[in-house]
Image (cartoon, rainbow over all chains, first blue to last red; front, side):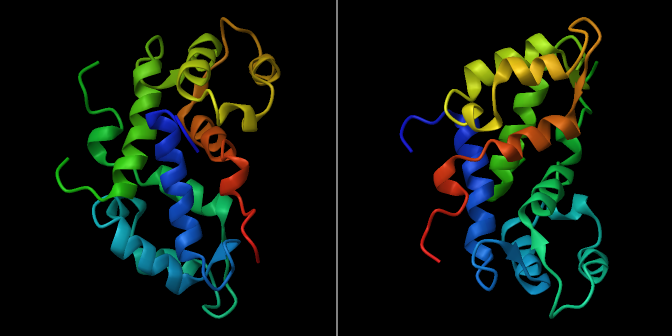
Length: 91
Length: 91
């Protein structure tokens, strides 16, 4: 994985995070509890922009059955942009 | 933007990239040419995983009218995972 650009490294970081926390699902999905841990530990600031964590987790359904797959995780990360990153700069 | 975690910084990096290249659309969207520049310059390795660039750009439609908005850009970045990041580890 040599010579990746800064953006490529950033993408890898976000992807690897998913894999680190997706223990039960063997890198395939996050359980609600794994998602909670990831957000609490790794997104203390941006996580707030995603909306109330408990609500998100409840929406996932049965805590023993629910699976957050990579695509959904990735979409959630995209929602996690800080207010200052989403265009408060002067136009 | 103090004390962001590594994952948060990574998310910011990917988001800021979009804003840097979205000149014509004033941070709201990428034109096909801006997208091409971004992929060529910033995703020399991972970009290949997204699929043929010319095909992507053609799918966007009229080069003078087409707009790639943030959500679509973000989805594209999620597809840009390197093969070794998407689960080639032993199960």
